[in-house]
Image 1 (tube, rainbow, N blue to C red):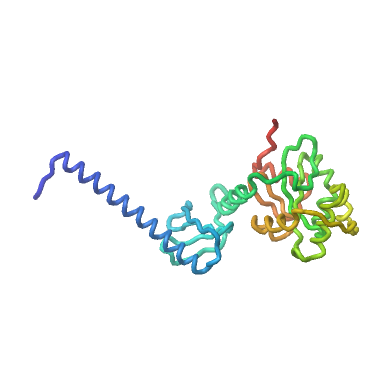
Image 2: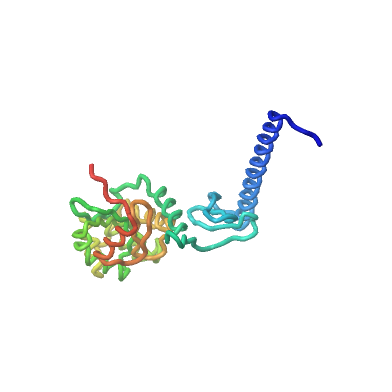
Amino acid sequence: MRTFKHGAWATLMVTGTILVSTQIVAQEEGSASAIESKIRALAPAAESIAISETPIDGLLQVQVNNEIYYASSDAKYLVIGRIMDLDTRENITDQAKAGLRKDVLEGLDRSQQISFSPSAPDYELLVFTDIDCGYCRKLHEQIDEYMAAGIAINYMAFPRAGIASHSYDKFVSVWCADDQQAAITLAKTGAEPEPQQCENPISKQYELGRELGVTGTPALVTTDGGLIPGYVPPAQLRQRLLAMKAPTVQSD
């Protein structure tokens, strides 16, 4: 039987560890490469594909543009859905999407929003809204109550019928009005705003909403990228923001 001196054995152990580690890294890189190739075949127009680990062994997160999917590490299965941690009750998929939304919203120009805010809000919400949406109108009817609850509502346009719709034209007229707050309040009563044209961000806001995953209105987005779909009454919304641990407004 061949024997090794302590130094030789230590060298062999270190070398073996390096070899194993290298093999693991190579396997991981190979899996990611195989997954990316298959996803690229399914979505050749995708601008970006990013692959990362999840808390589940054998399951990788696949980010395609701003959407989150999952794939088995052998590149055989694609999983479309959400991951929930049953112990902590945290929605891991929503957390990942929130991070993506937060990145997209970095540096957003506040002057490009129609805002209704108390003097010292506790919470700031970006609200994608449609002029003709019933629940959007219901939310706006209670705008004073949201502000009394310490919630700032910052509107951005999301005409559900698209850019070539009458709802889109209404939002352009609202944006171009001398008093945007009064114009949007009037329009949300069902009245026709005075037709106007000017340089406006309505189409860009609509596309931004789609990029963030907005599919219906109203859609409420927190400053850390959390998404609350649909109408929530003022008192309940404040409680929900508190439960979500949404960031409060930082005072200067």
